[in-house]
Image (cartoon, rainbow, N blue to C red; front, top):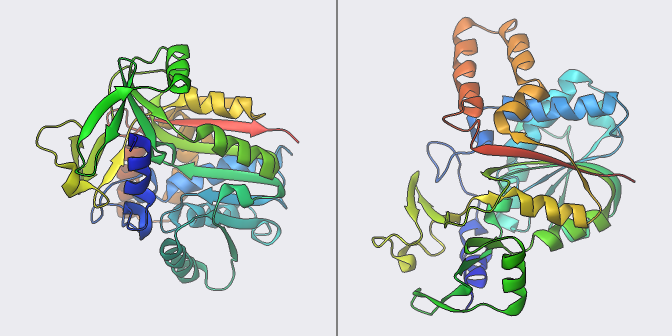
Length: 331
């Protein structure tokens, strides 16, 4: 089978890696910005709140998270919106797009633990189910989990039943895309165009803010890798046995944000902002939020949260490697 189908089964098949909720943080398989600090969600919510104040977003619209893991990010955003304007949790509607039933249950359990019965969350199993007027949509690290084809010298990777990779001539449509984007070696994401199309069709007016690791250009090198308990193994590492990692470990690659932007622009969106995670979070107000927190807590708690925020914005950790893109569709 082609590598994209193999990766699809690895992550989302009947026994795929994402079938069940995966713990994030020190005790889990990987770190994310969400697991680093609740101020990550608070700063995005602060940005959303500013858009509402400027009449660029609707206070009676939807706040939707895609790929919510346990629901930390959405809950952190709801909490900050309540701090900014308590009435917003009554006028806004909240939703998560999540296809895995076991993960949905974990999310609902956490949300109930966090807010009791005060917050109602709607679940959609797929982005194609949306049919709404306005939504602020947020996602963290979803585009790196789309299946991809591996391309090398006009050939694509295929995988046999023994999890062995070989190469065969690439189909014409893949070659056309690769040549048009000067891609000679590396990953070609599959599904960005369809995802953008369904979001455009399902939401009349939309602000989409997403974070991921990558760059806005073609690397012309393989970044695809396997994560196992905070250890990284390049896919073509001689010591890595795919048969052992298949559906047990995470597999990911660097996002080509030029491809993301192109897919959404072709679906009727415009690009509002593209910048490093550090610049975005500072623009969104994370430092101001930290200063407000300092007035309400102990010195020890303040210093602890400062260290967590450093993880988010430090150039040597997440600050520069992760990028934010804000895409907008006008009604």
